[in-house]
Length: 129
Image (cartoon, rainbow, N blue to C red; front, side, top):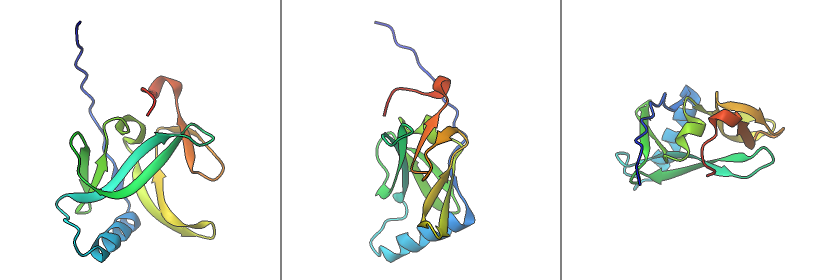
């Protein structure tokens, strides 16, 4: 059995000013959060009407995570999700439709009307998450 090593050069994931402000506010409200390990986890799961859904959560670093630092904060991405979210920016939007984090993802070719699920180009897809 042979193995092939693949090197992936990530563009990264970053925050907008508003996104960073909201993450900082939340982490500050968690008095016991260790900012050297804690961050916003950005992941992708199968589901939704367009095929994939974002999974955002405050979490600690795990083995195998890709870690991006922006605005003095950490963004944690598991290796399976990285090709789907690479190059994205994380914003916080407060509108009539609600408030919450929004992923602005350059890899998306289609999204559902409410924006909770998305699809990437067929040739860009990797194994199902």
